[in-house]
Image 1 (spheres, one colour):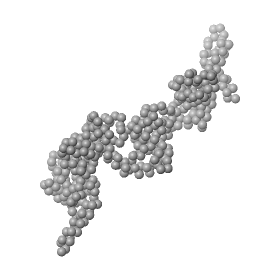
Image 2 (tube, helix red, strand yellow):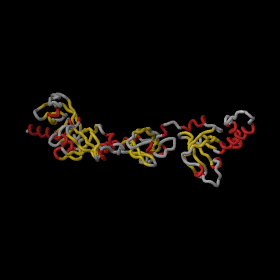
Image 3 (cartoon, rainbow, N blue to C red):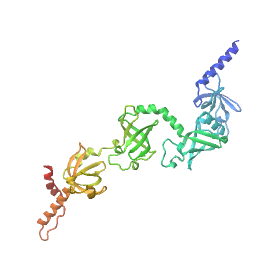
Image 4 (cartoon, helix red, strand yellow):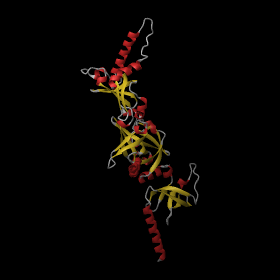
Length: 389
């Protein structure tokens, strides 16, 4: 009576153990016996798992493992006992192992050999597979060739003709990893955090950046650089890995605002030291409004030429007098670094030059050299006195 009960108890315990080990799980064990076709592996239960003996051999067919050795292997089946595959951990090697991986939904390792029409040729051990372009990554990359030569983990999504017709997907695995890590990623996204992300897409208003776990934030064009950015695609492209700062996160964590320029020095922090009233500067017209023209004096530093200081009469259109991209020589009238404001004048340059020319003409003596614009700075100071009073 005791022997049948013991057999039943042993079988029941083995059955219960196999329920806790799931297909696709990687487990460790010790080899306890090696036969002609299979080997037995002690994985800590009353019954041993089995593994194909060929998986314990090297490329020349010689056993590279022995009784007593520890191995790691993937569970390819838990029906009627545990069946393991060591090569699915290292990369599937035979058609039968690939079929097991397909049936179990297990990842296999493959090398992207080259880009072809509509996708990629992938070498998985001795077999060739096809990966559609949309399945190589979550983010569509501008240059398909960048994946060539890379070794990735793939999931087999189609297995036909005994392994001669294979279709694989890397994206399926990446999306699973995203879902698993999304909660951890969101907990790390707090205002002020500096993170690494990958550009997912670029639009005219900015770029969406993948922060991991499928979580994306918006890098608005105004937050990309201190200088004005006309075309975001000139700074970033899909697939680029960039370091950004989290600026804002809404209450439910779904809207995330990112910044890139915040990781560089603010050029306005030194404006008070480098800009003074009376200086002559050259700026590039960036935009024109009814009330004046904005000039970029250096990357990230803009000043305004009010209509009254433009030298253009009020009945004329500024857009007809100036054009975007034009270089203008201006005089600095006023600097307010705290308000990030610089007031400029085109008129002051014109007036100073006229005054200089008159002075040179009236002071010129027969045979005396012309000073040119050598005293332009002093003339500008005189011309600016009424504006600063």
